[in-house]
Length: 600
Image 1 (cartoon, rainbow, N blue to C red):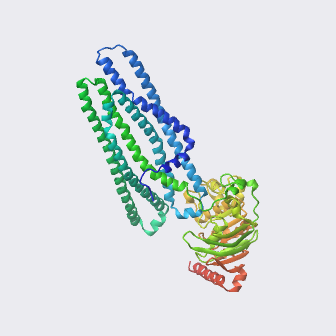
Image 2 (cartoon, rainbow, N blue to C red):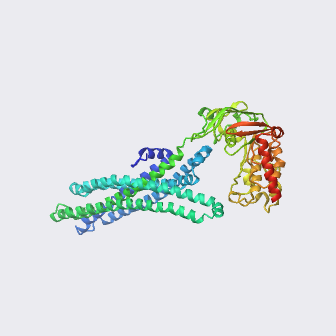
Image 3 (tube, one colour):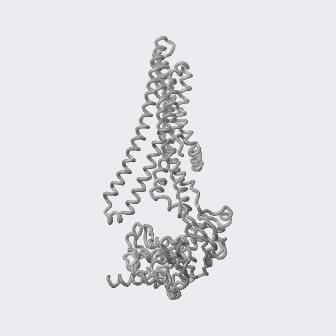
C-alpha cells in the first residue's frame, strides 16, 4: 500500500544511491548557507542607514559603509555563480548515476522480467522519472538550504531587534504547519496518479509507433485515437487535480505571510509612534516579515515537488531494487566473475554435452510446462524440436540458454550443473538466431560485429560467407558499410535473417540455437540458409526449433514434443517409417506447400 506522506526510507535509499556526489552536495549546501545568511543581512543595512544617516542627518562614516556594502554584494555575486554552477552539475551527475545503475540492472534482469513489463513502463522510469528526481533533488537542495538558513537568520535577527514584535510576526507559523500537514497527503496522492497515467501514455506511444504497420493494415487509426484520447483525458483530469491542489497551498502561504506583515505594521507602527521602536527597526522588521515568507513559499514549492518526486523515486526504485529471478551465487561470482567482470581464464571450456535431468518448469502464473523432463545430447549433435504451439519447445531452449531456470531438476553442461557457473558462461558460448531478427541502427559491419567486438574484418567476411550473406552485402552500394536503418528496416526480412546468422557465427559459439529461424523468410532465402546450415552447425551442439520440417531432415535427432513430453524421437527417415505424429505433420505440410506452389 502506498504511503500518503514523505517516506524517509525512500530518500535514505536515494541518497545512498548518489553518495558519490557527497562532496558536491556538501559544497553546494555550504554555498547556499552563505547565500541565505547574506540575504538576511541586507535589512540590517537599511536599518543602519535610516538610524545613523537619515535620522541623524549626517554622512559621517558613509564611505566606510559603502565599501563594506559592496564587499558583501561582491561575495554574494560569487555565491550566486557557484550555486548555479554546482546545482547544474549535481543535477547532471545524479541523472548520470541513476541512469547508469538502471541500465546495469536492465542488463542482468532475466527475460521473464521483460515478459511482465511493457517497454513504455521501462522508458518512463529511465527518462521522465529520473529527470524529475535529479531536478527536484539538485535545485530542491539549493532552495531548501537557502530557505532554512535565511529563516533561521531572520528569526535570530528579529528576536535580537525586538523579541515581542518577533513573536507577533511569527504567530502565523502554527496555522501554516497545520495547512502543510493537510496538503502533504493530497499533493502526494495527486502526483502519484499523474505519474501512473504518464507511464500508460509512454507505453501507448511506444506501442503505436512500433506497431504502425499493423495499425495501417487493420485500419485502426480511429480506434487507436479514441483509446489514446481516453488515456490523455485521464491525464488531463489528474494533472488539473494535482495543479489545483498545489495551487491552493501556495496562496495560503502568501495570505498567512501578508497577515504576518499586517500584524507587524499594526503593533510596530504603534511602537514607533510611542517611541519604543526606532524607525529603522520598524523598516527592518517589515523587510524581514516579507523576506521570511519568501523562503517559506519556496519551501512550500519544494514540499510540493518532493511529493511528486517521491512518486517518481518509488517507481525508479521499483526497477533498481528488482530482485532478478535468476542470479548467480556470491561464491560463483567471486570465483568466476559476472556479466560486467567475467573471469574467463577460470572458466572450463564448453565441449557441448548437455543433459536435462528430471527437469520440471512452472511459470509464475502456475502454468506447468515441463514435468520430469529428461534428455541427453552428445557434443556436436543437432537436435530438432517439433510440436504444436505451446508444447514446450521454446521453454526447453530457454532453459538450456538459462533465460529461465528449472523449477526442479538440473541442467548439466559437460557434466557441470550450470547453476554452479555464472550465467555469462553459457551466454558467452551461445549463438542464438531468432524467428524475427532484431538489427540495431548502424551499418551491416556494426551489426555483425555486435556479436563479437573483437572480430576482425576477415572474421566478419568469413561469418558472412558461411551464412551466405556475403553475396548480397557486396552487391549493395556501400557493401559492409551500408546502413541497415532502425530495426533493420532498410533490408528485406531474408537479408536481416542472413545478417543475424552471420552475427551469431562471428561469436564462434559452442552451442547454437535456431528458434524457427527460417519460418518468416521466402523459399529462395530458406534454400540459401539450408545450403549452409550444415556448415554452420558442424562441430556445434545445436537445437533447432522447426516450423518448416523440410529444414530439419538432416538433424541427428528429431524430438516431437507434446505437453512438455517427448512422444516421438529419431531421425527423419525413422520417424517417416513409423508413420506416427511426425509422419502426419510432415505429409500435411508437404501437401500444403506443394498446393501453394501449384496455385501460386
